[in-house]
Length: 183
Image (cartoon, rainbow, N blue to C red; front, side):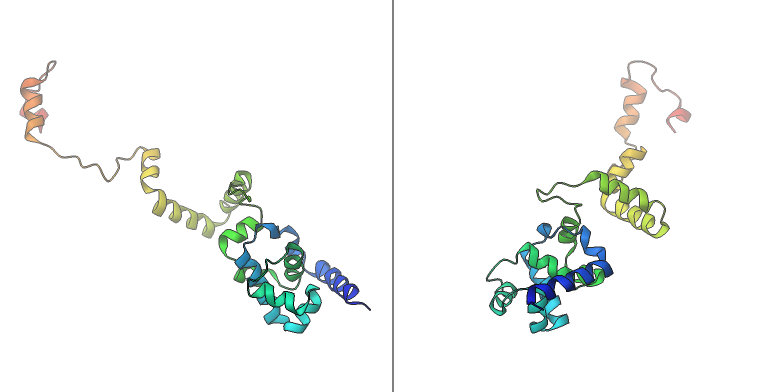
């Protein structure tokens, strides 16, 4: 069996066993994340076995891991087939993972419909709902107060003698004369 046939056979076996990587767009991964994925595969399988399953030469793997050359998309795709989803989540950071899953597009824009679906799903999970509410309160406190019509905490209401004088003497219509009304 040739090296290419071995790689293709491993790919088919792994695809049927763990299809989690089918939704990963490797084009969204940064160079650091690509190297981290290869490093994890190398650590997991060993250098020689990694060369076999990735279908690359020794020198190429070395150059990819040391940042001499950019890791091609197809090599990253083959590497993902040798990791489980948990390992992928450990080595790929949050923003790169969002790009790879299509939530953040390559131009930096956000797929709003996907985010809104995730929020709708979160409303059914009590823990996630509480986490979102805590995040909103910590990061959007003043916006939430404005939306709810609550006086912002940055505004202080204080009674001043000048205002009292205005009500009693300078107000044009309906001056306040009763001390009870002023109180």
